[in-house]
Image 1: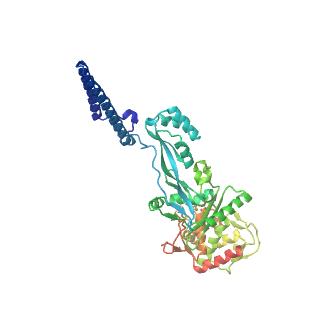
Image 2: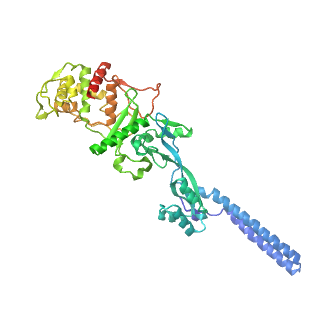
Image 3: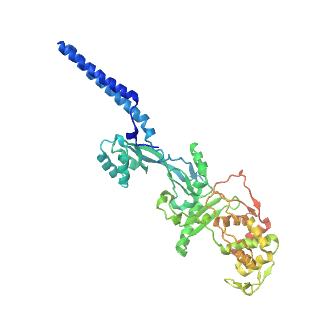
Length: 468
């Protein structure tokens, strides 16, 4: 239990003995002076008075020295900031794959006041309010009357620190504290993330690598992310443009290296400035790339077609009836741009036919479809260091109606991260590679598994190129 220093501090027993001895000595000197005066010896009287004054000064200085030592050694432990604020943890720099900083510690300062050393409370109050215009008056009054050393305010930059220092107030001191700075501002907010004032990572890469980033700080090292600032800037620019043109509530973009799983850029709009998280709209803090799931629509057809080719339930020479809508138990499946004729496997993909995709999936069967989607990682959160990687919403009962819906990206919801990871397997020769926001080196061991054959991957790449 903590107590106010001024109330709880009492002088050690030896100090009381010293004071009693000092009083006794003074009385002895005075009695000696009286005896000298009665004996009519003025020289002895003067000497005794001088000796008495010197003795008083000597004991006075000794007493002040004792109190100063007690204040320095005892008060900080009794009246420190235990239970009030934790010291900030240092963090290593985060840099992009080319070494450019995206997060770093910069010096800030906490201002501390020991109210026991304040001579003029009113003058101190006036000066501090002028030097720190945004300072809360109630907090200042509390610190100035606390009777102990307390933190008044943290996060001061050098200019604010100098203004307070120039006041020359006794009892006012400073302690340097690291504070995180994000040079890119909002442009990489959801990928880089942010840390709290005590140096604990709370989101993005800052949270994902919280422990290794703090460990690396002791050795003066840096942690290299997979992102590329140039790619990140281009992605954010395109997303902002799309947001202004089409007016959606949110937008997400990802750029990955399909051969390594490295995330070169990630953006989620609306975004926020990690340098001023407290001012951010709570809705903007959501990383929609990992925390939100969507029915991704026709982009899902790629997995349906890859499954059919790889399992040999269809081929590039296959044709399917798209002369009329498909009726499944009372549900009618239409095409957005109907051709009203049989379509080849390739035409179904290029025209994005829902009817054709449904027939391909029904021909393969739900068990085969589920097996491939599982291998593509679409029934689990995306494998990535980010804590913001949500589970998908997949159907439980795989009726023909559900299977047909899943074939063209309905009735199943996944994150953009999971979608990007699965597309990587389609494009890289058929291997599912976990995503990463950390730069990989050639010697890194990465656990992968084959989803489709290299031949199926090549066939799907050819179809994707024809779509562009």
